[in-house]
Length: 637
Image (cartoon, rainbow, N blue to C red):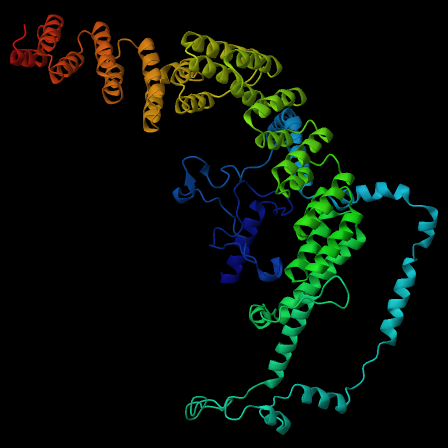
C-alpha cells in the first residue's frame, strides 16, 4: 500500500472523532493572555497614541529639617496634597464664623481708634474743602453787585488761547546781537580823557608786582563790573537816606565814606529771592487782607532788604486791614522809633482795649516810673481780670502799696494762687492766716496753699500745727479728687527744706512716702529715696524717711545701721546716741549696733560710758567674740 493511501485512511479515522470548530466571538478563558505561550508581548505604536509628551512632575512639599522651625513648624502645609472634602469645608466654615465673631467684638474699639487717629491727622492736615469753610461761610455777605462783577471764566481762557495763537518767533536781528556783545565787552584800557584826570604816577602799581609768573595769562580788569557794583552801592545808599518828606535826604558828610564801606551789597541771587518773596507776600495780603501774619512777613521782608520806610508803610496798611490783630500792632510799634511807637500803641488800645500784650508793651516803652504805673493802672481799669497786668503793676509798687493792690487783685482774680500767696507774705501772722484760710476756701484743689500755711506756722514757732496741717491737706485733696503723684510731694518736701522749713518737709515726707508703693518694695524704694535726698543735701527729708522706715521695720538691722550712719555723718552726737540706744532695744543681738555706740563714746573720751555699753552688750550676747574682744581691751564685764 502506498503512502498516499495510508494518509487517506488515517484522515478518515480522525474525521469521525474531531471536535466541533471554536467560536471566536465567545469570552476568553480566565487569565488568558493572547500569544503568551509563544513569548509574544503587547505593544503600541506612535500612530496609535499620537506624539509623546513628558508627564508633568508632581510638586511635592519640602518637609526636610531645613524647612522646619520649632515655633512655627514646617514652612509648607503638611496636607497640601490631600483632597479638599466636605469635612475640610465644614471646618473652614466654623473658623470663619469664629473670626467674624472675634472681629465683631473689637469692631467698636477699632473704629474708635481709627476715627481718633483720623481726627488727629485732619487737625494737622485738613482736607482742601475744610480749609475753605470760613470762606464759604463769608459768601453769604457777598452782594448781588459783587456777584455780577465777577468775570466769566471762559473769557480768560479765550484770551490766553488767542495769545498762544498770535505768538510768533522770529530770528534775532544782528544789530541786537552786536549791541549785546558790546555791552558785555571787557575793557582793559582807559579813555585819554580819563587819563588826564588821573594823578600822575600815583595810580601805577609797584614794578613787577602785578605781572604774573612766566607762562601765565596777563590779568584783565573788568571795568564794567566795577561800574555796576559802584552803581548798586550808590542806589542802596540813596534808598537808605531817603526820608518821608519828599526832596530831603539825611546825609552825614564826614561819615559817608565810612558808612559806605559797611554796606552789605546783595548778590543778584539774593535780590531775585527778595523780589520773588515780595511778589508772593503781596499776593497773600491782596487775596486775604485780614490775615495778620501775611502783613507781618511782608514788613519783615522789607526790613531785611534794608528798606525800613517801606516796611513801616506795609505794616501801617496791615493795621488798617487787620485792626483787631494785636500782633500786627505790636510789629508796627517795633518798627517805629520810641515816640512813634507810643502813638501807634495808643491807637492800638483804642482798637483792641482788651489786649494785655499791647498794654504791657505800652508800659514798657515808658522810661518814667510814674508814667509806667499810670499806664498799668489804666490797663487794669479796662482789663481787671488779667493776672499779668496785676503782677506787672504790683512789681512797681512799694511793699505797703503792693499789699493794698494785692487785696484788690485777689478780688478781681480770685483763682490766682500767686496773688493769694503774695498777699499772705506781706500780711502779719494773724492776717496771713485769714488770707490763707480764705484762699483755701476759694481754691480747695491747690496744695501750695496748704504748704504755705504749714510754713507760716513753722516760721512762727507753732510746730505742732505743721503736722496737722499737712495731714489735713492730704485728706482734703484726696476728698476733692486731686491726684498728686508721690514724686510731686517729695519735690515739694525738698523745696520746703531748701526754703528753711525742715519741719514742713518732714511732715510732707511722712504723709507721702508710702503713696503708691507696693508692700514688698517698701524697704528698697525708701532706702533709695533716702540716698537720693542725701545726694541733693536734703538731710532732714532723709532723716524723716529713716524714721518712717524704722517705724515700719523696727527689727531690721540694716535700716538701723543706715539711719545711724546718716546721724553720724549729718547729725549730732546726742541724736546718734539716742538712735543707737533705741536700736539696741529693738535689735539686742545686733553686735554692730552695740559696737557703734561704744566706739562713739570711746572716741568722745567717755571710756566709762563705753564700758557700760559693752557690759550691756555682753549680757545680751554672752557668746559673741565681737563683743568680748573690745570689752577685754576696755576692761568691761
